Image: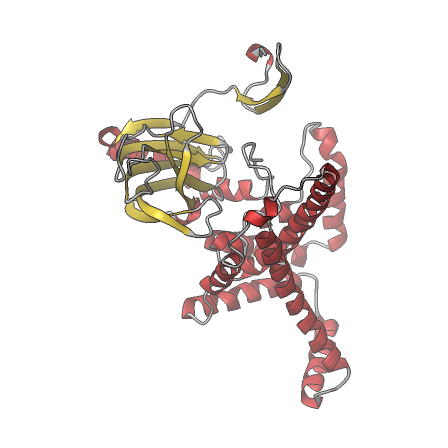
Length: 426
């Protein structure tokens, strides 16, 4: 098949599925035509942030006074891939031919291969432009296997907001799902420079779609885990409903009297601007618990880790049947279960993200939410609600008129999509 790249639009990912000319089948391609800026590979001795003048120049580019200049240029990431130790032996000779693949969003770079070595040293520096400060850097170690697909050796995932600049860190390699530890460790040194104002604006815009994600497969383990996650959230809602019901039924006189007084006072005196203010108080209360150590965000992550440790054996899911009709029915059932599994995961993740927003799991997002709530409190205090609703409606009705290519989105959902769920925290 042939592609005329001159006819493709610039600076966007073009997804093309073209039929092969002489053979059956088609080829799926992702083509981006754009200047290669911000991406580079170099040796340790000539890394960009190693030069003080160049580091100052890059830092100046992302300072606060340049917050509204080139709004899409959010930040700069430098990754030093130093070495790996005690990797898994993938060859019959007890050695491996390891190389690293670094992925940030849809950007991907790769090191050279170090042959016949379980303790490779790459000593390379990679730089990426940051399009979303909530992206996760994925570093995967493979074993080169000639003409065959490379063998997986291990993987690490590092959220950009968790990076400690200039500090060499040792990361334990994990399996493909990042659920269990694999053999070996990798040494990285990371630096991230970004503009917080640009990053905040980007937070309320749709997340960039990943074009290289693998097709989801049915897994009894994932289905069981998602059911447990939804059950946990459902039980919290059910306990709240039971508490309210007990107050209405006066099962405890003291509790019911207090609840009745709080209800009357709240309904009598509440104003609309107090709603975001109350959420600010909740943020402040949870922040005090986190600071004093009374609440540990790793507890939920540990619970999710225990869930992921259940039902390790999944080989039975792919057993073949001799009858074709039975195979078709199994595939149909699997598609339904995969859909249910995905829906359960989305529901569980949504509830966990709301909880983790208030629990200061990602301080940047919690601070950003506090600033937005503070602004909402002031706006609702001084501006009547009808004017706010009118402005919102006019904006929604005229959005397509002002920009025919505008993407319809929900800023609240876009914000929550950046908050990690309990599984992602692991």
